[in-house]
Image (cartoon, rainbow, N blue to C red):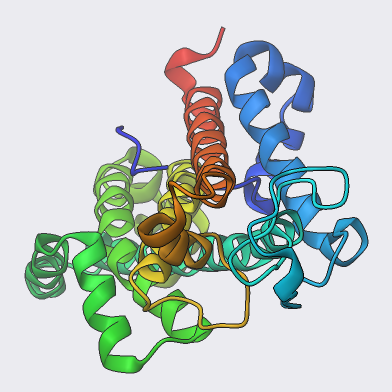
Length: 297
């Protein structure tokens, strides 16, 4: 199964790792790159949660006397065109980016999982209605569909989460549907139906547990993609509105006007986005290999 553009250390993923003998140490031994990705994601999450403590300045406070200050002892990563501290805005921006990424990954994963489970088990009539709708949704590029929804609903945190979550649904639904179609033909599912188990019991007791592993991997892999799309929307002025610091918003003005004069305005937010997307991709790949029974030693 190919990765869907890059999840974060989600609770379901951590729970699955802890259930296996050896836990995190076995995961680190089998997938060292995945463990590195999980560690990087954990560092970013902790930095975002502790932003009021680890930040050195108010991220929204302007200071006309400190504009375009290069990195130094007072401002570790420099200041922007309004004299705001880049480091403080980065750690506070991590809260926004991670909140959007995790919320979008969870909503897209749960929504897509439910749609895929229903499509795979409800019968041909339902499947013939659901699949064309998923084809239409998947026919639009992710960023384009998110742009249209954000422009129609207006820029806000809730709008951005919904706009990014909806395009993820068909991707997850297809994977869950494929798993459900295979599991429903197995002997134990037929035996459960033969002894009188209803459709809901078969779906929740016998089919759903088999979709957890691919669903967790897909959800994990979507975190980086969600953060990247949020940064793109903020860069275009349709993401998180001011004065809330966002990594994409930090790039939107700096990259077009001040990149040559103050390159640190572009370098540090760009590195933050790249680091999180790279780490979530590593963790998603490692988690996929760890949960794949064909790759177990």
